[in-house]
Length: 154
Image 1 (cartoon, rainbow, N blue to C red):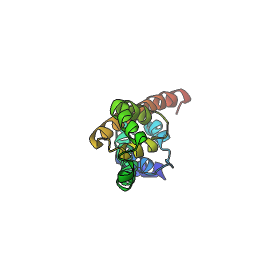
Image 2: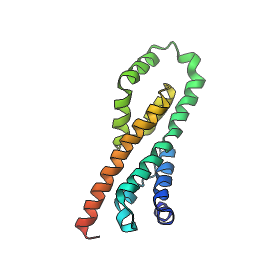
Image 3: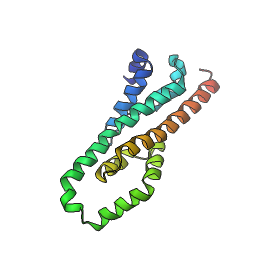
Image 4: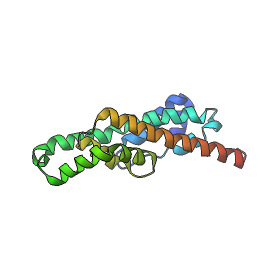
């Protein structure tokens, strides 16, 4: 399904695949292999990585807004909670590092997105840092995919 989307829409297909994959909370749709085989589809893997990262970053807004919804609902009960205050301090101090690690790694990012929305983490910072982490992950996949295709003679 995603492979045909990419064949039909080219780089825009990578953006949409990233968006769809990251929009699903707790059930990501793996599309990374498509970046790795993008040269076989006649596309530049690094441009595919850029479009994928942009789509995946915007897809993470789903979890961020879920967290904001929970926060709005629970705000009156939590604003004086010690654990909540500790979490806010933790994100104020290490939020950027936590975001970059989770967006780059295969760790479940949805929990972090929900947490950022819940703690009212700055949306602009959330998007920029998430994009940077996802871009590096996608570029790494593109690079190793290109090498793998070369060695298997594809």
